[in-house]
Length: 248
Image (cartoon, rainbow, N blue to C red; front, side):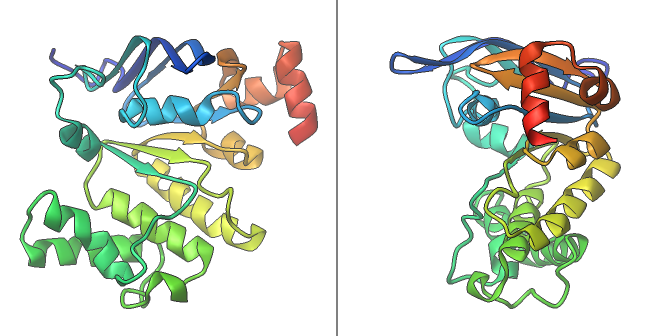
């Protein structure tokens, strides 16, 4: 199936997902255009993280479809490695290799997975470390970096694969309040450069500032969605209003 930029880069249609008898997603549909920034918010256990894990096939689905650039993500024929080159993901936990320096962590996947020349990879990795404002930390090990710095290395590592879409799953949840901002600034820079970003976040001020569109999920369904101003100031569903009254 061919894809063109006037079509959604990620299209989620009526997606259903269960873990055993627990139905986590009950028919979720979202279309994301190239360059858009989407924030998914909602209470714990509402299916947010499960949904974005389904986008790069970390979770399978029981119904519906998810396409990235026109290709069905859950097609058995699709090479998951090819998919994950297109769709980068940054998790709540940084998952850096503790025995590798920041630079080595960023270089690892392009060297091992893409088999790219080391000189090219190193040049790109150094540029990415600079991009996430960690110049001078190239030779530091994860244990020598703060949580916020480690998370920025994790973002650089994802970007090293040159993805078309970035998924962020509660990337500031494990951080101290003072290090949250530096990670959010990094994501904001990416968004400003036109990277398609899908974020699960509980940072409401950040969502209001960077998102083109906000989706509120509860109990496995999208309850309400809209542009930030409309969503935060004119929410109409009682569940949305109640959630916002607790977090704002």
